[in-house]
Amino acid sequence: MSLNFFMQNLINALQWGSFYALIALGYSMVYSILMLFNFAHGDIFMVGAYIGLGVALLLLKIVGTGTAALVPGWLVLVATILISMFLTAFVGIIVERVAYRPLRDAPRASAAITGLMVGIILETSNILFLGGQRLAFPQLIQSQTYNIGGIFITNKKIMIVIVSIALMTALHQFVTRTRWGMAMRAMAYDFVVVPLVGVPLNTIAVMTFAIGSALAAAAGILFGLAYPVLDPYMGVSFGWKAFVAAILGGRGSIMGACIAGFMLGFIEIMTVPGIQILNRLFSLNIGSNLRDLIAYSIVLVILVFRPHGLFGEPYSAKLRL
Amino acid sequence: MLLEVENLRVSYGQIKALQGISFTVDEGEIITIIGANGAGKSTALRAISRMVPVEEGSRMTYRDQDLLSFAPDKVVSRLGISHVPEGRRLFGNLTVMENLILACFARKDRDRIPADLKRVFNLFPRLQERQEQKAGTLSGGEQQMLAIGRAFMSGRQMMLLDEPSMGLAPLLMLNVFEALKEINQQEGTSILLVEQNARLALKFAQRGYVLETGNLVLSGSSAELMNNPEIKKAYLGA
Ligand SMILES: Nc1ncnc2c1ncn2[C@@H]1O[C@H](COP(=O)(O)OP(=O)(O)OP(=O)(O)O)[C@@H](O)[C@H]1O
Ligand SMILES: [Mg+2]
Image (cartoon, rainbow over all chains, first blue to last red; front, side):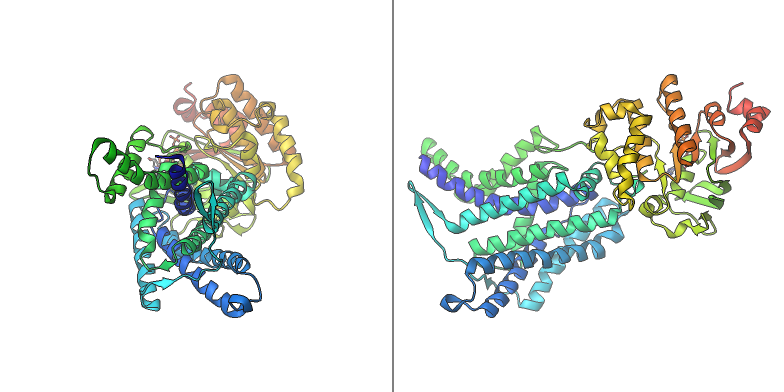
């Protein structure tokens, strides 16, 4: 494998990893602070992408397109991302309030299937209201391809990776520097005791759902830019993979979820050239459709050696006072 | 009356942990509830903190307000009733300082926080030395100091203490109780102490109640209880 080829794949891996990492953060935060697998999260990513689509179309209608546009496309994109993050945060807040809070003291398995059901409701509502056909995501910025020493990079890929890393850094700062972040970290350790020191547990829970959903919306829009076709089930496979990344990253670790997301992207993308090399070296005939099988077997092996994930933080296992 | 508990009943499923107990705590008082394992001492504190649901007919009044109308975090942040739980339950992944600061999360009087921090560090100089250390790596005694410090930062109208003596060497135990007495005297903090170590508890408190399998069977001044032959036999090992 030449260096160029490797670099080319690395860039693709960074892009995929960005999607996984952004979605994984929502999974990871909710799991960390409430011991809850929010299986609706992949579908919140889908809803975020559709909200982004709606916001983008609306903004384009207001400011116009092409040479007649009042403002440049990147500005529309920034506005779309911010507005959609804001709106999708409320979707997360509603899901928490309606589906999870009434089940706060229920067995964890009940809460988990609630997530699955909320996911199905979101998917079918989409079909109900939008007819379920695939929709094209407007290309808010002109695609440009740069050739850097034989490696082809598009401006969108660069932007996707930069925006993602910026959001992750912002979240990291929030969690390590503010008292709300401190409350989240405390909850990740022992959420039962949090109210006992005067911290409003529900407020922190709501905030966590809001932030996670907003990040998923950002991922949805970035995905729409790179792969401009949205469909109601786009969140399913992304959801599961981001869930894998969240667990692989380790409970309670923002950094862990991000790194695991990128790692998953890397493993997935690199498996294909890996298969090709193996085929050539040993005259095998492994199909590249075995990509996920191989990629996730690797994840499994990692988990066998690190059952708490890559960066899992300690926590109190007591579920009551 | 600061706190009035009347006919408090709490069940965990089939288990009737408290079967209608009544007691009071006056402004500035130190009160203790003593009792054997499983008597329901911790449950009583959990009920005051609103961490367990109480049964129909239970009444708790705090400064003429219905305690049952407050959510657990509001009991701390609005009423100033803090709780040092059984087993300390510190946030082990946060530093000593972060544990103390987090306890101020909902405080309105933010300008008083530095003075209160200083107060905690005066009471427990060890905590100041270990400010940046993760709470999970503190020794048992240091953890108990931090648990008390954290409670103090979160609310100091009244403190509920669940077996603060547990696992402490005698000398350290004296230290901790001296610090508690100082808080009580200088801040006017009322204290409700739950203990298995009855001798220690009665020495420290002004009045006491004896809890046996969910029922209060005796009450009186510490001196009375200490001289009661049944108590002597059952709890003081004399
Ligand atoms: N979460 C719970 N679920 C079921 N039963 C419980 C629960 N918590 C306590 N109990 C039961 O309620 C009774 C009172 O428990 P509690 O913890 O209040 O006792 P305690 O007086 O604090 O005892 P100890 O001195 O051992 O701490 C016990 O019989 C206990 O087994
Ligand atoms: Mg107890």
